[in-house]
Amino acid sequence: MTPQTADALNSEFAIPGVLRAESGPGGLTVLRVTNALAEATVALHGAHVLSYTPAGATDLLWLSRMSHFAPGQPIRGGIPICWPWFGAHPSESGFPNHGFARLLPWTLLAAEGEPDGPTHLVLELRDSDATRAWWPAAFSLTLALTVGAELRLELMMLNAGRSPVSITAALHTYFHVGDIGSTRVIGLDGCPYLDTVGGANRRHTQSGDVTFTREVDRIYQDASPAVTIEAPALNRRIHVAKAGSRSTVVWNPWIAKAARMPDFGDDEYRDMLCVETANARDDRVTLAPGASHVTAQILTLR
Ligand code: BG6
Image (tube, rainbow, N blue to C red; front, side, top):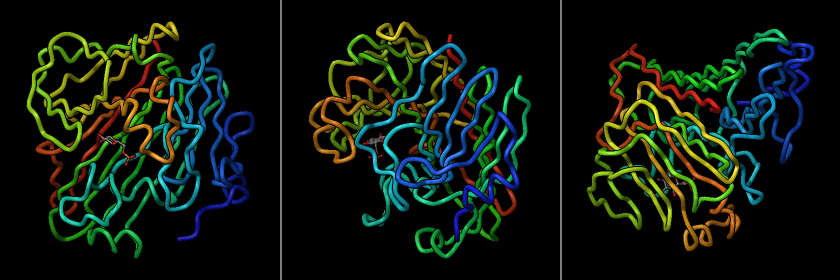
């Protein structure tokens, strides 16, 4: 499918002073949103939110200086959409990690907003020859995005085919935390989790806040609907609320894994933390023909 060009997007969707499409990093088409409440940048590639800056603040999101920005490649940072499988494909080792939604151009369907209020965007990915090569199902995946005093993402997955489908997914948000050593995640005390560092699946129960002194890669199961990231180095607390998701993934690669990833700077693990609104492992979404499910994430600077 041919991606929409910035010119075509501007002639149909531009909102003076609020929304413009332009050529962004690597020549990828991006949507620049500016209103009285916040600014954001969204790539059509993956419907990927690259930045979100509430008025008077700095970017809540983290983006690697080493990221690829190219068709068919994942972007390292911002908010990747992992869909229709989270992590490795269950049987095909050659298929892309975290599915294909983050590798393909999406289509902007609608945009509205006034300069002094929130801006609403709707982007869509439908099945195509490219997606059917990895996953035979017919689907519509839409991201409804609201850029305002909070950032709201609502990912709606619709089974447009004639057989049931089973999906795992994540809104894989990378937060800018400044200093991982002093960062904590509040709200998961008592929650069971799978520790997946090194490909293992060790079962534990969280005790107190989540803190970081080494690689952390955990799937919290039946996780509370909201957590708070406390990042004292940036003097900030970010409230991460969610719906339609029972799993919360917390990930920081630490030193060795950062060094192994070509699109991740060796020292960048210090600056970032992923807290992901997920449907992972047993928390699968099964959709009958015609059925849909919404997984939502709402970010608020406190
Ligand atoms: C996280 C996983 O969600 O994503 C990690 O829990 C993984 O195990 C990370 O390393 C990044 O994945 P990718 O495919 O973007 O390198």
